[in-house]
Image 1 (cartoon, rainbow, N blue to C red):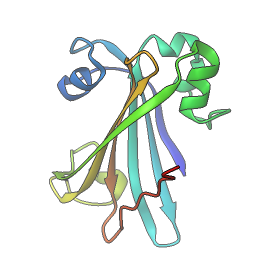
Image 2: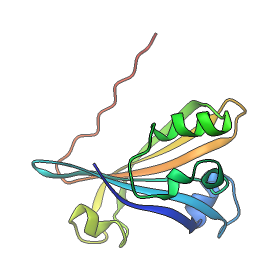
Image 3: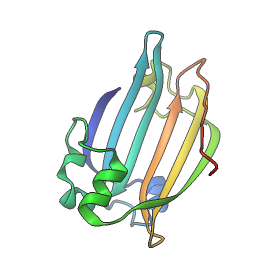
Image 4: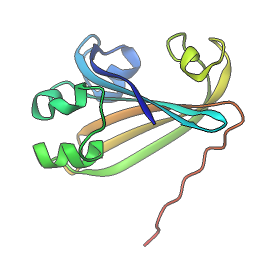
Length: 144
């Protein structure tokens, strides 16, 4: 995995809607590219409410987190991720994502959007993944 970028950005309409903030509000954005010997597996971008950057400044630095995003947020704020919704669709690659997947903008690819909520029912993270060509999207869950 390589962390392509981390910082704060103004929320576009998709992100603002997902995070329940005003369009243009400052939000944390972390972008990661997953690779193996065959090339790019996926590009994953996460957005979090901007105030989390104050509690966890590591979120806006291009480096590995001391814990995964969920663990870091819980340690710093007490907000624990307890619910997740995944939505899978075919999407056209946006211009800013296409070069990172080594594909042309507008190429249709498999995409998954993830929404995460804390124990208070507030959104803690929104993420969108774009799969590389020829890759399989798989998920495994304990059903205990």
